[in-house]
Image 1 (spheres, each protein chain N blue to C red):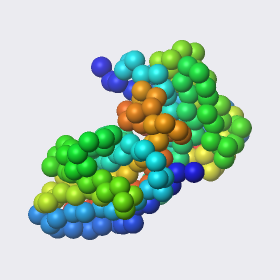
Image 2 (cartoon, each protein chain N blue to C red):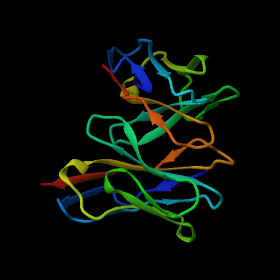
Image 3 (cartoon, rainbow over the protein chains, first blue to last red):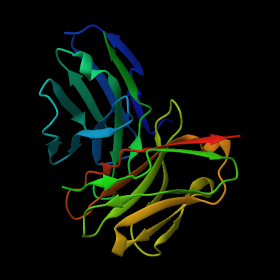
Length: 112
Length: 114
């Protein structure tokens, strides 16, 4: 069983569209994250979410929104996609204070 | 805010050479420290971690790292690299008593020639 799974793995879409990426973890962790990895491999935190709080990186445009139906899922919804949104998006989970992340396989988003 | 610096952005080695990748962080309090590896086209995987105790930490695939508190450093080492070590390496830090979200360095691209 995959510990952290993301779908879809690849996503190609036009500018202006809305898309979602789903993430599920079966590790029983209480915290989930979304990271964006750009073309230079830099990893930037976008969101962190646990039962108690959502932490949003203030530099993330409000076109991006996390949605968590339960503690095992943290989906990423993106409105009005732009060219600069093209990147690999990684979901991860952890027990909140350890910082040890378990990553999904990534979702490569290409905006045309 | 916490910051993490990885000094070597690109490293090219021949097989059997020794490796040391630098990592420094800015926070002076209690930290947890990590090295992750990302093989080409894959996701990040944990190489090793330091929470407390012996500052010399051994990880998978022959990697080790040393936590030097006075230097705010957590350098990664391997005595003899292999072609299969070609990958991107990321140092990460979190503050268990504060901002628990891990902060990553910019990564080091390692290419090992056979």
